[in-house]
Length: 258
Image 1 (cartoon, rainbow, N blue to C red):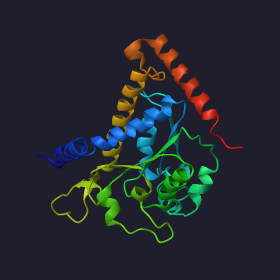
Image 2: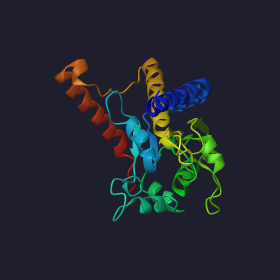
Image 3: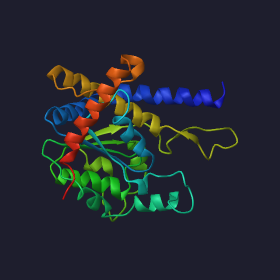
């Protein structure tokens, strides 16, 4: 079996471990999300670096619905330049800057019925830790999606004083290893290849999305779901898109601080 297939097997093992060990935490998170969205509130989503991927997975895309509010700072997530202006070095520096999270949070008005979900594989960067801390200070329940092994293997920044998992009401473990990558090649064992945290984080995000939808449906409060024309036809698809966007706009309009 070649290394690519081995990585898929390793990824399946991660997903199976999440299902086996994190179902209770995913249920807790889903209950929080359903309570917030069902009350007309928002679940705010945040992540830096590649942790923007599960943020965008939650909304908007096919099979998603309003109530999840993605917050993405391009200065910490726009990686395609790699070097030069807007390069990776700057992004990694910025995400370790204490105090920035409060500046970001000050742009929004949070309601008591809202919640916050923060994604970070390491859970050590100043911005993600302080984003969770600031949300809790504002009275929001906080869900952290992080790799517990990777986080505990790293050092807490003295200026930050905690890990993301220390600042959350619910912690969902990505179940990925300390170095994130899942494959070791013979002759290059020192440098594992093929990260697993994006796969794991997207799986967690969608599991929460689906379970939250189930809870909202039972309450008669499921918002319009963005659905492909291949599923429901072009006219119905456009109707659902417009309805979802209008509902998102209605909820998001009150979040901008003046």
